[in-house]
Length: 234
Image 1 (tube, rainbow, N blue to C red):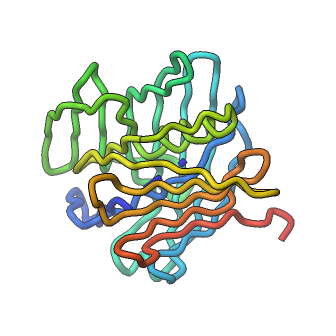
Image 2: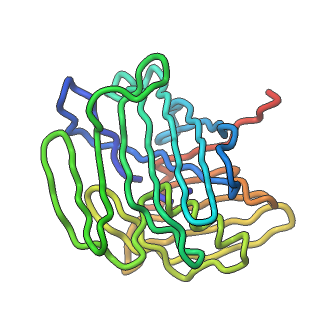
Image 3: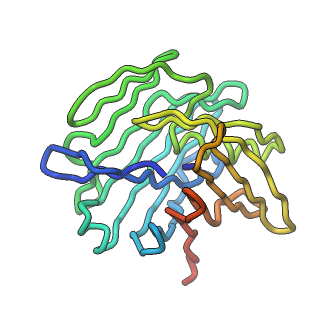
């Protein structure tokens, strides 16, 4: 939840070839579909829109749905309303994704048309399908998509068992991040630093109930992407 700059596809008729950002948000550990959490999104300091998250976690399975509603400025760069989905199984406190995808959203909030991206996790392999191709890749052990990985980290914090490393899987690569935890009176801050001299850092702030308050994605020392939880009373 939650981890992580990737790329946003430009949505051109049936071709999607531009860079895309995965707007990765955290997940609360509940056993039913929860009310959507609302976030403001900025990219390189510019308002990029809003995002809404819903999720379901049961004893052995989970599902996550994240909707992105870009601002007018973001739409000028070819970013339209879209939804990310992930689902998988839970075994011995480990979240194993089975599917991850991104879909265009209609004005009514329903997914429509062909998926922008579809990733299947099959044993130790990844099957990645996009509008312009198909690829089959080996999966690193414990690799997780962005949504699943945020959920994993939230659970690990709740159990007091933050792992030393997490492996992030996107449609283009797999990266290892080293994790550290800074516990304060009212917040827990997790920092994920790309291993092996990587240039990426992800920072996540959680409240005492492990709800994500803020997340930053930093590249070469500059904040590329940030989300901040909205005040529902405001």
